[in-house]
Amino acid sequence: MAEVAANRSNEKLEMAVTPERKDGTPHPPVRRHILARLAGLIAFVVVAFVMTAWIIERRTRDDDFSASVRSVETLLAQKIDTATGLMRATVAALGTSDEITHAFLARDREMLLTLAGPLFETLHRDHRITHLYFTGLDRVNFLRLHEPESHGDVIDRFTTKTAAETGAPSAGIELGPLGTLTLRSVTPLRHDEQTIGLIELGEEIGPLLADTSLSLGVHLYALIRRDTTDPTIWRQGRRMPGQPVRLLEYGDHLLVSQSRPGTSAAERALLPELLRDGSIRTVQTAGGPLSVATAPLRDAAGRDVGVLAILADRSRARSTFTNWMILATLASLAAGAGVFYSFSRALSGVEAAYRRQHELEHRLLTLSDEHQRIVQLEKLSAMGTLVGEIAHQLNNPLVGVVNMAQLAERSVDKPDRVRELLGEIRKAGQNCSAFVKRMLAFTKISCFDSRPSDLRNVADEALALFNQSIGRKVSVERAMPSGQAMAMVDPNLLGHAIFNLLTNAAQATGERGNVRISLAPAALGDGRRGWRFTVEDDGPGISDDVMRRLFTPFFTTRKEGTGLGLAVVQHIVLLHEGEVTAANRPQGGASLALWLPEAVSAAPRAPEGTPP
Image (tube, rainbow, N blue to C red):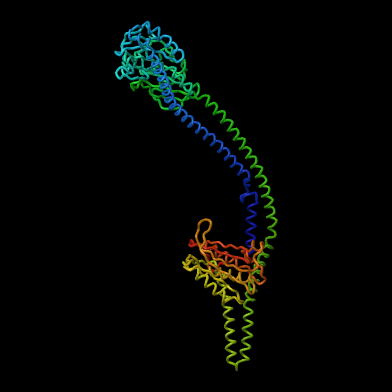
């Protein structure tokens, strides 16, 4: 058998080191295979990184633009509120001027123009106010400071109607007859607690769009529906700030205001499509990518009069992202090349070491037969030692049996003496039988059959066997719980382990030693609950060197020992999913403890006769 195993080992090693297959073709180098897979992995990681970064950039870009669209609406509303507050404060200041009030009551247009004109110029220059009206409660205009020659018409706008009817200020964006979108604030003018007229301030929406555009980095275009104004009148109107130089028509919409002068051809080409589909998206144009969206334009009455087109130039952001991606990709490739080179060098060293190892193994194959013979000799030696131990254990009682049988033959005339000798012979035979049974039980120690058992009874049976078998007087102190200590164990195996611990403790104490066995509930650090057997002695303790090898099979410090007792204890405890520990007591002696869980899972059963 040893020669067959050696031959098979030779064949396997030859297959491992041969550079060719059975058909004569060479085996591909392992290093080349590994490096090829590594290169593929690096390429995959770099491509995945680039794709992931591109997807994240695209989603981030869309999310940022969506936030910008919301910010446009919010910021424009805030600027409208701020401008409205300034207008109302200005009207409140005008209302406190008795001269302006008396001029209004006297319908003295020249006086009102003289008194309010400088203020209007200041407001127009510093605060971009483009309209200042004095209007009666009948909504007939008395004076337009921005167009003094135009007056006497009835103002039919929502804000004017609301302020005249309610006597409260009214404000909002309204579409003028000349096609202008204007933020208007109409405030009642009061005198002697009576409303005597209306003062209206207006600001074109163009500057508000420009401020919002500058703050958020977007381009804004205000387009109104064609059916809300007359393009003929609109062509005749004055060009207000933010208005295009000429009329631009896009289907059923007219461009009335924008955040910057002029309109790029790329943006102008997108407006018709944007009016049809105002969803947020990014469009690639000749000038670069543009993010586009629309928001509704509503006047002070809440009517939908048009749309606010929002466009953002993404060329610079895309260029920046592309540059960073190129740098990141190059850095990734450089890092990958470094990893590839380092791994290649490492594989070269491993491959060289592998070849040296196989050369050494190949040389060692010549010693295989001798090695197998040595192993067989070691097995025979171990078996011889075991047989010698068995022979020694059986020889002493058999010699006694022979001697006592001879004495019995000589004492046939003394019946009492013969009966005494026959009793001694029976005892010796029982001792031999018990030894043989113990050896058989040892060979079946891996058979495991757990059942609910009272650990106190298991300990008492092991203690009784110990007291009967020990040949010298050893004092054993017993400490057990008063109630039942139930656990799922194999009582035969556990009793064998406790017997071994007691025997080991008795051997360590000497002729007049003391041994203590105790049982108490205990929980491990992981929360598992169970019971702990502790066997203590007052012997010399355990040295550090012995402690490290305490549970090693066949290790013993006694000339007559086998070195299997504590190894068997550890094996039994592991079968019960428990733990066994050893320590020196502070007051002297050693303490060996085995912990067992309350419940043990179904353990695999070894074949009958399998040794531990």
